[in-house]
Length: 591
Ligand SMILES: Nc1ncnc2c1ncn2[C@@H]1O[C@H](COP(=O)(O)OP(=O)(O)OP(=O)(O)O)[C@@H](O)[C@H]1O
Image 1 (tube, rainbow, N blue to C red):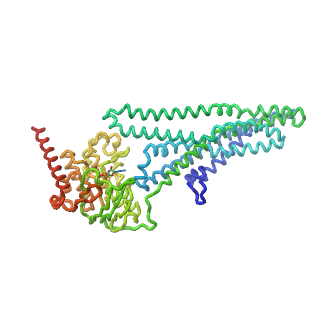
Image 2 (cartoon, rainbow, N blue to C red):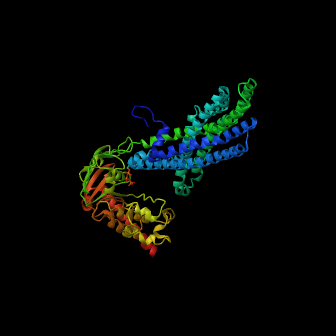
Image 3 (tube, rainbow, N blue to C red):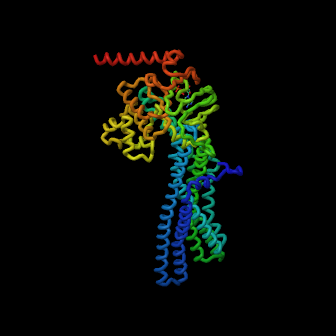
């Protein structure tokens, strides 16, 4: 995200924003981590004092008992405080991850469908699930432990400086060298990291697409080619990872060998200084032990580089998603209680080419308006513009005389129930799937809505009834049953305007009858905008709009259109002959 002064926000600050009120807990984890590292040095100091006393022949029994006890206490406290610190930091890390995930989800509800569809579902999955999870380690460990890993060595080095500056420098050589080598491994490699992330995104999208399209894949025996795409995505991830590790291993091995070897530098320097009389043997022992005490902290730095690389890489992508342009919301939203619907000279295109060319119509509250027309004429698009899944390019959509762009999205969403053909069932119980219509509905209300929509009888077929998981039930539900579940959702929502993308023309008569009865329950007294495939269901609509190539070619009641519109007449004839055909089929089957 660009700050107001044009500078890019630091990725760490960008991530810590999500800690909200948990920030003090993170500071507490940092304090505990510093204390833990400080206590970690106590055993080394105790041993150093013990050795000094032994060398000076001044070790009394009391000291001989006390110093090991102090060393033990330091050791125990180090681990207790470390455990407490990581407990705190893990809690904060998960809070941050939860906040990131919910912010992305909230954002998605505020952007247009076009913006969402411009990204693949795999891309969302990668960021919301995988990348958010990758932040856990860096957040839980890097931030608290890095402070300790900097502070404690600083104090130790200051102490070593008091003894002899050359010893202090010698104690630092391995840490500086090791970290420089490790850092040079990451230097200028952000492109490889990006390439790795993108190939992961691609692999995720392919597998999501593969699973979603499994029915088509099986039906058309596409296993080989679809599998091929997935396989090449997997192979790409393997190749990039291998390439990355090939590049890394020399740096990693050398830095891991150098980092813990502080003694290799301190000892020769110390020996030289002893022979010159600059330090005593006791001081050398202290220096050796202290330099060993800070090795762990300095070694941690290599992990921090990696953690920060992860944060620096993931945070901008999260921010890009959160910066997606939202459907503009008015500063002072207007409200209306009316359920009149109107479109005035609406123009719209999904991309550059316009597909809705200046559509105008009005529907009074409580009336039925049907959109009919050939496939691709723009019926569903008009319905989606009414629900503001997209904003119009020109013209306006009104509800109760208010331009829907001047209403709050929440208000508009409450006013409209949109029942599409694509009745998505979430992986949760049938009860909760219906409850989406009204999240605070009681079980009784849910069951009432299900009964109104005629779902109760097929839900009762499942041993677990309403508690059946939609994932388990989904495969056993017919298209009509799925649509009745969607209608139950809408009945529960009880919005004054209902937009209904009707199921296809050829549902069986029994199912059609049940579906029609549930639709009647849903739409009673509401403003109904229906995309009709079965013309028999909209014969009594107050007005029917015939759409052709994104324009209204005719408008009127069923009777009027039969004489006014050739397209409508043709559609009606086709519908009648399809019904005759289907009835004849039934008669011949029953004979
Ligand atoms: N999300 C989209 N992105 C780009 N083009 C789209 C999108 N949705 C629909 N279209 C295109 O817009 C045109 C109108 O489509 P729309 O779905 O509104 O027609 P329809 O009359 O509802 O068709 P059908 O009866 O087959 O459902 C079509 O050319 C379609 O390919």
